[in-house]
Every structure is written in C-alpha cells, then in structure tokens.
Length: 379
Ligand code: GLA
Image (cartoon, rainbow, N blue to C red; front, side, top):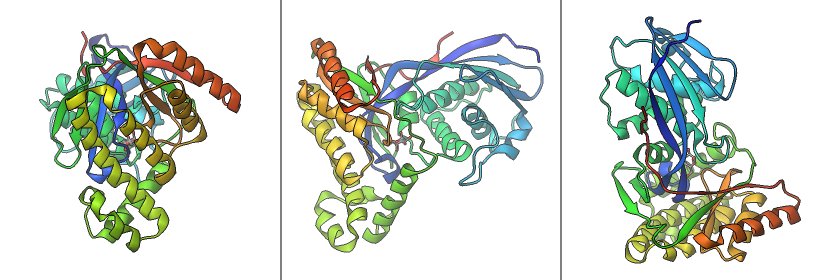
C-alpha cells in the first residue's frame, strides 16, 4: 500500500448537551454546544477510485473501492456493520455523500486522530463524521452546507453504524461557535446561537466522565425510542413534540405508567429547553441551575437512563456548591456536567472524587470544557 501525502487537515469537535435529552428524535428542542476536544482528519488524494481509512483507534486500516460502498451499506437493522465499527463512521459518511450522486470523485486516504474521549457521551462519533464530511465535501466539490453535512453524519450513524440516534450531535459539531450554545428545533432544523457568557460571568462547565461505557446501537436507547413512539401513537400525534405539558393529565389516563413517565420526560424536557433559552437571554447562565437539576431528575426517575455513577456525580457536585448539574448525552453511562463558579473547579472536583471513592466506584475523569467552534479546515 502506498501512502498519499495529505492535501489538508479538517477537524470537528465533540459536544456537551446543556439541556434537551432524547428530545431530538421526538422532533423537539435541544441546546448543545461544541467543545474544545476535536477529531482531526488528514486526507490525501489517490489516483484510483478507492477509499482507505486509518485511525489512532487501531493498527488496521480499512480499504475498499468507492463503488463497493453501496454493497457494504446500509447495514441491515440489528446487524453489526460489515466493516469494523470505527471505520463505519468515515466510510458511512463517504457512502452517504455519494449515495444518489452520479459523480466521479477521486479516491482518498483518510487518517483520523481524536482527542474526544470515546464512550463518554461527548459525541466522539459525530466528531469523526463532521471531520470526514467536511473534508470530502471540499475535496469532492460537493458544495453542501454545514446543516446538510450534519444530516449526512446522521445518515452514516443511523444507516451505516446502525445507531438510531437523532440530529443533535452532528448539528452541534458542525455549527458550534465559541461561548455559545446551538438552540435547534429538530423538526424545522432551524437553529440559533444563544450566547452563554461563561467567562464574563466567571463560570465553568466541569465534565465528569464516569467511564461507564454505553452503546446506542443496542439496548436502552432503542427501547426509549420505541416507548416515545408508542406514547405518540396513543396521543394521536406524529411526534411527542406535539404533546404539551397541559396534555399530561390526559396522557396519564391513556397509557401505562412506564410509557407515561417516558412521555412526561420528553414533554417537560422540551419545555425546559425553551425555558433555559429564555432564562439565558434574560438573566444569563448563572440562572439556569434549577432547570439543569430538574432535567437530571426527570432522566433519573421518569426516563430512567441515569446510572448510579451519574447520580453520584450530580449529587456530589451540587452538594459541593455547583449551580446546576445533570447527566449529558444518551445516558446509561457516559458523562455528567456541572455548572460551577470558575474558582470552584478544584473544590468540586475533589468532592466528586471523594464521593466516587466512598461509593466504591472507579475514579471519574474530570475536566472543564469551553463552548467552542464547530467543524472547519485547519490547514
Ligand atoms: C445521543 C444521540 C443524540 C441524542 C442524545 C440524547 O447522543 O446521538 O441524537 O438523542 O443521545 O439526547
């Protein structure tokens, strides 16, 4: 195999979701931000029509003909991808980009390196998709917008990797801006940047990565999606976006307790996103603590996607003076976030470490993140 010198470097970040969990595939609202941890794709052009992907995740590159992508994907529901899972992200992006375009594009070598922790609920997968999609969009002269590239990333995730996720992560990774959150209506796909003013207010976001691994292609995530669809069908709407807090009494009468609690999480979480945007605009980030805490409680008791480590992280951070705290991402593991005074990073971190040790849990990884810029070309 000959190596091809990269013609450029493109990168895309992971994300933290400030609030709005599992609302994206219910056509509701989300408020994530891109973080400073990024994934870089170095891409070289080949003189044949093949694509090779290599990454720091493994020693084994994967190479296929571009024309073969259509035989590899889509991955049949419930099956593992025909290539190693990490390779399904960039190859899935290439497949989704080429899907219905009868165009002649050059082959590429893509080397991927990532500083976004994998399995932490910080969207390491969206970061790979965003970096690969940005690079190929440019090198193949496709002219797609950032939002269209986000949707390409989601197609790769849903149909090549087989994870039934929504559009939040890819949108945050593509559209993020420094010191701002991306307020996205997942039905219209209209988005707006909401300034966070973190540094000005002397605030910080502490990430608490529990090291409890989750996978969204299987298990609980899919099960929650099914419950939401069931709830929507019972309410006679196409998506839970169309159920309001005022409808909840009626919902309680129509469905079993578990389905009702799943529905109540989505309905109240949508409202919390809208409230958070309003409070951020009117009073700033210092005032959103109660909304973050209510969001966590809703995930813990109604949607039941938290785990003991995440609850410990949230409870310990709050007891140590955090303004707000919640788990972030799909749940069943991953990370929590705490909104804290910038001066309290050490004290809150120490309190969380102590609580984990007392509970007999492995020590979490603690670091702060700043809302950062989305995908772009670096060189
Ligand atoms: C994962 C998915 C997102 C979203 C979140 C939960 O991160 O990729 O689409 O559903 O879980 O909010």
